[in-house]
Image (tube, rainbow over all chains, first blue to last red; front, side):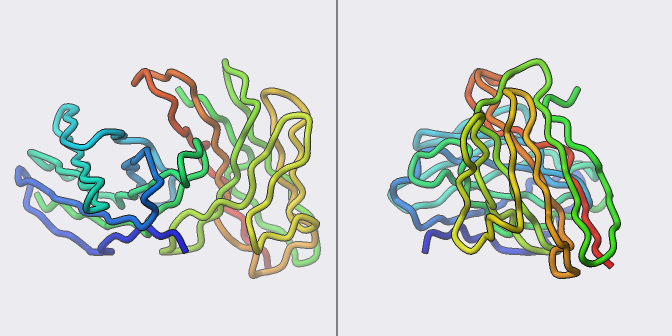
Length: 112
Length: 119
């Protein structure tokens, strides 16, 4: 069974620190990798996506992908209390757009 | 603003009744929409893929006769939970692929979700 694994947390970091969120996946056929942020009671919103091995930076966020290790991570620099949310890692199912497998999410708490 | 509109955001119904949830793509046409479900503290699970003008494709374990999906136009998909029971209480979220969005890539964009509570 194809799976996406995340540490459920909670991950607690002080304001201004770097938050590191990790995710592993089982399907080697996956080609697209996504990080969504979900506030309590709300639907997910896309933070970043990454397709190629290596790092991808967007503002305070950096996604890292290592296909050989089947590992994807998200770094949040200068963490803010407003970053406190559950972060969902999602992986496409064998290259199928829209058909994503989600992890259970890591709850991040940024303390002022 | 939101590009995928979902309605209603919350609904409470009695056991045995049916509930319809609407999902609309705003300012773009979506030949395919996706319906996800999320139970508390669980991950999102794909229920079905809704295809305009044809039958929906259901994931394993999802009852097609209980969760009726209609995708009658390029901007509207509906999910009807028939004869709802308390165990159907969940957060239902529709989504569509926004081609070439602000990021330039095709990404899955979610509606705001519909929280269903069956008494």
